[in-house]
Length: 207
Image 1 (cartoon, rainbow, N blue to C red):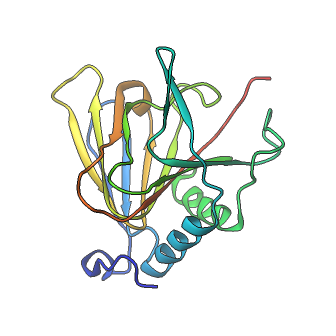
Image 2 (cartoon, one colour):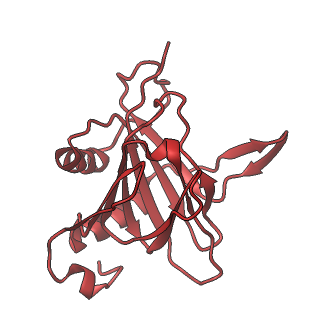
């Protein structure tokens, strides 16, 4: 199925790699890490078969709906894993193996995010350390609509970056990124198609 026809992006059939020369972060972008056929397949499969659900967050005693849908999956042998937590599917494991081979990082869980339209996004934040450690390594895979991924340094206001995360891309966030940087996916008034983002992580609960 020809869902996202960016011929310029997919003509080479090979992944292009960008290593960002920025302080306090190890940030690498692999464009076209998954080819057109793979990307279209995964997009359709995850959109239609993932057990998406809404999530709540609490701010100063008030509860709000998170403006996106999510689905959390992890290996059942993880320490403290809840019995009802879905295992990684065959497709998720195939993606995990591919990014592990490239990044030389072992992942045991993944958070799937569905940005249904421009009204969905995520505000400025650093990923939480509970159960993941202070400087967790995150393998972020995107399928579907291109959305801008914005980063800003926590103390150096002159350091900002915007990365378009395209269909089939893989972004590796490592080093001290979560300590020194915040990131967001901004909302937009434009009419856009859904985007699916997979953030692979290594959970390490203390029980």
